[in-house]
Amino acid sequence: MFDFLDLDRYDLFGAFWTTVQLTFYSAIGSLIWGTVLAAMRVSPVPIMRAFGTAYVNLLRNTPLTLVIVACSQGLYFTMGQTLGGEGTKGIAFRLAVLGFIVYTSTFVCEALRSGINTVPVGQAEAARALGLNFSQVLGLVVLPQAFRSVVPPLANVLIALTKNTTVAATIGVAEAALLMRDMIEREAQLIPIAAVFAFGFIVLTLPTGLLLGWVSKRVAVKR
View 1: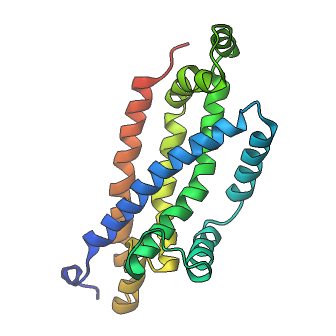
View 2: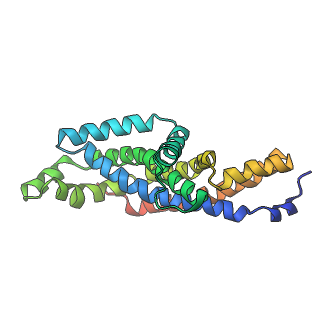
């Protein structure tokens, strides 16, 4: 039987720390790029709207595993792009982060676009009447209210991203899923090992959901 004392032979903390890093960097990048995409989707410029719509519809319906593998095979093995990483592990980590940003930003975009639609049109019209251009209206009037109204859906996206980081194991990133697979192969005890990693992901996602749920109540827009 699997002896839990044998956990000392595995870098469990290091694997989950890699998962946390993947989630953190991917979340920041996805929030930035997703905001840009949301701005494109509501832009008065037809080309920008078309690009944003095509990007979101295409990437959102593409399997995440395919996106991650495409970043690895296309950028690194075909084009030789390392994204500034050093060593196989460093390069794989950065490629995985890029793949998660490319994919997750589409869900951030749609969440923000739904938040933008909750802002009364009269506020944007009043801002334009004061002489503000589109960028100023979006950045000063619309987006601040949109962000406050979409904290719960963004929290769901963040939790999904945390769980999706397991896909990075397909290109050799040493995160939790890769270690779990290695432990199952070595110890041949599926249920105890799966329970350990399930508990680890609960520890990562449950506090996040509770914290962001509290934040959403604190910053909710009163209409």
